[in-house]
Length: 167
Figure 1: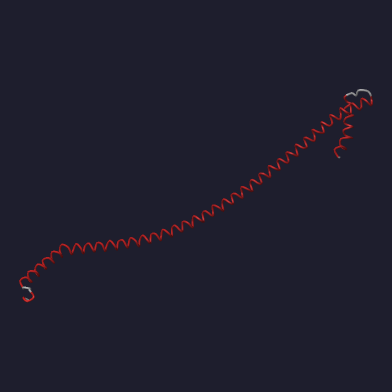
Figure 2: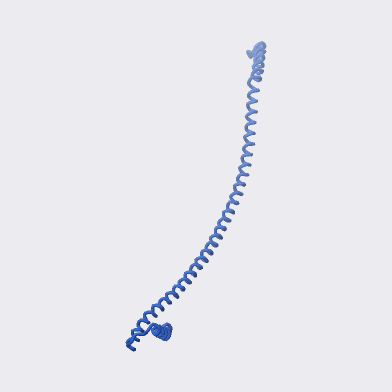
């Protein structure tokens, strides 16, 4: 070994130095590095588990959201259907109410027409009685008393007015 430039004492010294350095590094550096790598490995595994759980929760949440959306759609359709039914009922109610009001107005108008007709007949009788008195005075040339006057009016009205109304 001497030809190679290695002496046994140097080799032993370097070997002892290497072993001491290896022991010190093993105690001080190797265990912390291994512990750090194990911690990192554990963190990665925990992160993977958390990611799996999050994915599962997301899928579960997506299913729940889809179920809620389906439920909300059905409720919305039910509300629309109910609103349509209520609108139809309201329309029917309002139509019947309007028809009743129209019928009431027609009946009221018929009553008013009859009343106006009666008033017009009374007015016509009054005017006709005045004319009848003038004609009778001119014909008879005398004044009629009240009873004769009323009898004459009634006779003329009964004879003339019904024939006039029939036209």
